[in-house]
Amino acid sequence: MGLKSNGTNGFKAFMRTTVRGAFRSYDSLQEVRDAVLKRTVVDPEGGEEVTPIDVDVPPPLGERQRTVAFLDGNVLMMTVPEAVGEVREFANIVYKQVRDALTAAHVVIVAFDEPAHMTKAKKEEQARRDAARRARTVSCSVDMAPCPLQDGFTRAELLHLSDVHLLKPNRPCRMRLYDEVMKMVFDRVANVMEQWTANGHDAGVLILDGAEIRGCDRPLNEPRDVTMVGTDPEITAKFARSHPIGEGDIKLIALENRLRELITTEPESYARYTLAITSTIDTDTFVVMLLDVAKRRVNPFAGTLHSVFCMREAATKRERESDPAARASYLGCDVALLEANVQQHLWSECTGATPSPEKLLSSMLAFSSAAAICGCDFTHDGLKGSRFDHFYEALPKFIASEPSALATFNTALASEPVVAQGATQGLYRLCVRASAHMADKPRYKRQAQSVSEVSDTLLKRSVWATSYWAQQEHEATPEWGFLPVFAATSMSG
Image 1 (tube, rainbow, N blue to C red):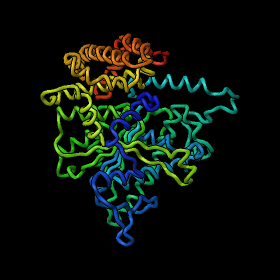
Image 2: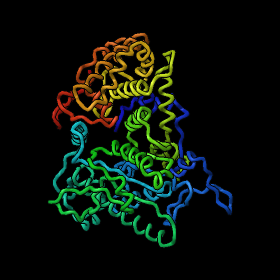
Image 3: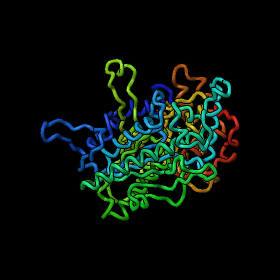
Image 4: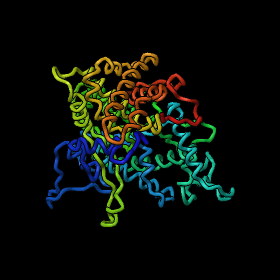
């Protein structure tokens, strides 16, 4: 999910190699927090570092009360191993991850997709994935059907099911499963927090954004009610929004910006929060957060909030072979540091005065459009022959030599589609520049020609993706190069 992965030339791998100083691996979110806030946790008796624990005891105070964590709920569900099929054990694994996050942060918000409000472009991508999954599914008799329950299944039916993973290919059943799991997790966390509070501890806050808290109690004929719910109604209400957001990735940055607003407008209650940790595995979160850094430079918030993007990475086969107890880790990215290093590269061919915040935003929009056109959920495999590292290498000369084309990228933030599509002019010029750069490389003549022959459809879809990542969502219409949902599309060429 997210940006196209292409080995060492894919976006994530290339950024990690190119800007090494912005990345670091951690064993837990608590370790991320302590590293950022320059705090060493020491056992007063043994003098050894304290590690996160799974038992239901109050988490340590201190830097935790300065931290807020935003978790991708879909990722939490995806990390449950296929071997764990019983719903109670499934929920227990999710609970432990939420519990670890509450050890690290005072406020934890778990965000889920809201299918009813998903952009048509995302629905098209989901339809494409579902079609590919069905093509790989072996046909079988009715008594061996892949989905053993129907949407509207009861809690009793779910508890008797030996493998709940069989429900996941069916989207309605998957959502009902996830809702019930989060109900189990939320109820358990709430009970533990009551005990902490009764014993005089600050229990913290857990908020669910996009889950239906009734779980299996929701009647089949009633729509999902995904009103934000939390263990602290007052704080939960502060994060509530007036308009729905369909995709969890966009929710995560919207939640972080809401925290920044609260720090600005209600500093007496929220200025204590100085660290925001966003945890997901979707690589398009990189560009979402990088664009947000550039936007905040133009329209800054008051207060100081450090932002870290963490990607949970499972232990490799080699690590498990050498240590059977090897656990997943987190790849942490200092988003502001990554953005600063990327900007330094983008403007490396320019001389003279430091670029204005508006120009720095233009260059980040160009950078993000390059990532989109090389392949993402909305452009599929991307432009035939393109590689993100080639575009990255070509960007400095483009920025230095074509200021007018660069300026067009700012139109991607316009609310009117006809204005926003003006950014396709700049993206086309960037493709021409990348093509010329590739033509100078051995064995890339044919790919260079393909990049120079980019289609209007792909230019529009790439700009649409950039606008979407920048939180300016346009309807995914044919004017943007999108076909009706469930139609097969090919974006290469």
